[in-house]
Length: 292
Length: 162
Image (tube, rainbow over all chains, first blue to last red; front, side, top):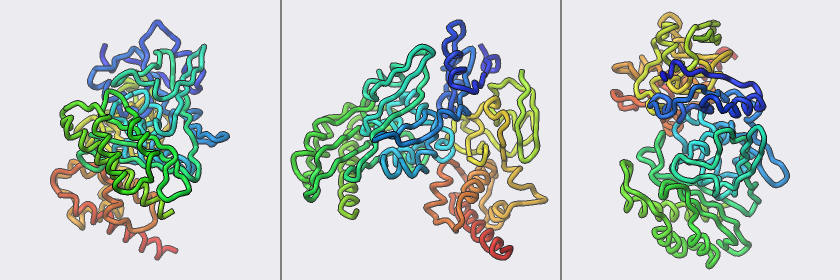
């Protein structure tokens, strides 16, 4: 079927959208910001009978604090995240990651829900969502389920989301005063680039100098999906994070990642850069913590 | 085919088009607004940049059915030869355009950026704001200078008005 023969419907409510997704007679595809979906349409990879345009479903575009969590509507744009006071104060690592996505145009168009649904191993917000213990709400006409982010992805471009489901909400932990986070990315150029390696770090700091009580580290682009560096996370708690300790933790990252060689970088380069980015991130975080 | 209504550069338009046609193609083919250009077609080069409701986006990745009832501004809407915007005049004065293919995209991105700020941006700020636009001729230096001098000029003009 030609692209021009596909229909496009724009549901005005979530219920209407769920009904459309429930229709098993036609193939359907959700379309939000379009930064990935339209590229795939043009390449002929996605070729549904009907595109369900949810770009203007404003009921799914919000950021709010609920108890000790932050609820983010799936259609919240990356620009919304970058500009949100709440995200900058309580989930800084996510604001930084959103700022590193593509360029301004793509930040204005792309949505956090779309970034998850597309499931690129290089998606920039995803490592940040890993260290913020994100839970993803999936809704269908008959069911609502909440899936931890580590269980969402089943491989590059694949998630557990069923064809009749839509991502409606992302719930993340709101960071306390003693928690700090950072996102580091290596791309071929500063703007508009796909990550060669990226890393998100979130630390809970103690009262003694550079004492880390708990930490989470998530790498992107170095395995089929995002991975947590559990050995490095364990090492964070052993000793105060002075420069030599940071160096040792970063060296251990070399063994935790399982990158491939592709058009963007070789596996060996990715391993080395994973270590370097982690070292740089921890170093910058400690500087920031001491200056606070 | 479907009739899709939206506003372009202040004019309400109704186009008859498949709703899955990219906005860029509708602007160029149906509305004769050929300022916005197609280059990469996948959101990497910025030569198709337009504003939708004030935000800069790549019109090659927006389907026309998605802009129903929305407000689109293209480079033509920023200004034409007879009513040129300060920014466009600055591009000419600084020699910030050569072959011109990328220029309309740069104009829209820069205009959207300048609309959001009230100071003369640093070189670094301009680079971030225009990171999604590629130019193969100018080497960017003159483009960055043009954006800065346009900001300077609009601030002075506003000062005079006030």
